Image (cartoon, rainbow, N blue to C red; front, side, top):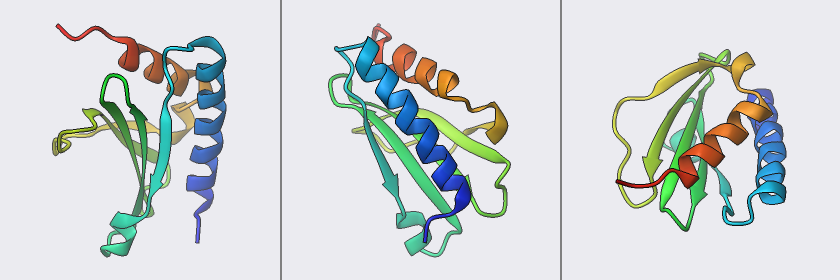
Amino acid sequence: MTTPVLEKLSDIATEAHTLVQQNHLDINPVVGISRSMRASGFAADAMTIDCLKTKRRIILILQDNLPEVIRYQFAFKNKDPSDHFEVINFSQLTVEKLYDWIVSYFTEKIN
């Protein structure tokens, strides 16, 4: 069963993904929903947004007991995420903000 918060996040991600594909042909983000945390007994869902070209990943965690916040991390597809996640109020995660995160993180040069 999908939660209303996950549905809303999915809608935001879909719109941001569409804008990225329209405006940045060099970025082809792959968005996925993982219910493995829930299957392991945690009342949470995860969304990953991956860039296959740069091997970068944005992780968004939705916890049932904290529906007003999203935990997130800029990570790498081929590395385990760190234990530290940033927190943003769900109301602050707009299509524009997610779009900006995707574009800036996936096009950022690696030094």
